[in-house]
Length: 233
Image 1 (cartoon, one colour):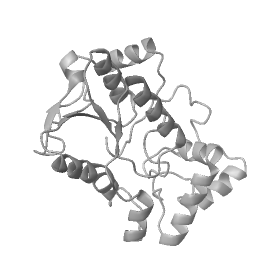
Image 2 (spheres, one colour):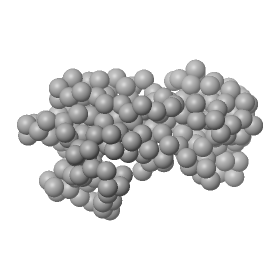
Image 3 (cartoon, rainbow, N blue to C red):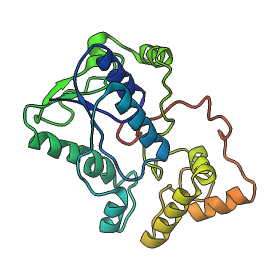
Image 4 (cartoon, rainbow, N blue to C red):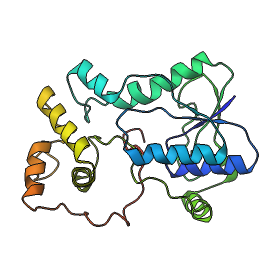
């Protein structure tokens, strides 16, 4: 069985669409964190319907469950989120399904990452097979009239920009409020206090936003690059 390692980002989306055009059969292997924004799940459902492929989601605990277990938030020094929420569930699934082939969206202009998940499957890199670079991916998606979500990582990712925290506060206040609650419960902050002059805690950020302060980059949503999980990347 072939599985597309599917994040919903530009590379895996272009790869899935082109493989379907070429007549290949596969499933979309998506490892959720439980903290994705709604637009990502909507995109995954659209692509799955378009290519006629099932979506496989390996069982795992959510980001919130792991935070409760550790009583701590993931950060630059404790980057457990990628391994425990993304990599380990994928490895467990591949181990349970021997003989699988994992199709990874690694482009021709990216550094090779052979055997990313270990010797649990056969690996293929279709974008590299086709010689596709960044510009080829964008051109193909434009020709297919497909727009990928701007965010495919966690809503509460510690590595996001200040402008993205503002957009989360503005567009998804419930998710922002949950981040504030998690900071209060654990006694930690998602943001590092040394990164800039803004408050490190989300409650302090919210107070600054409510006072009318706007971080640099707000209003540039249409020109910002489309992102996949920056921690996983």
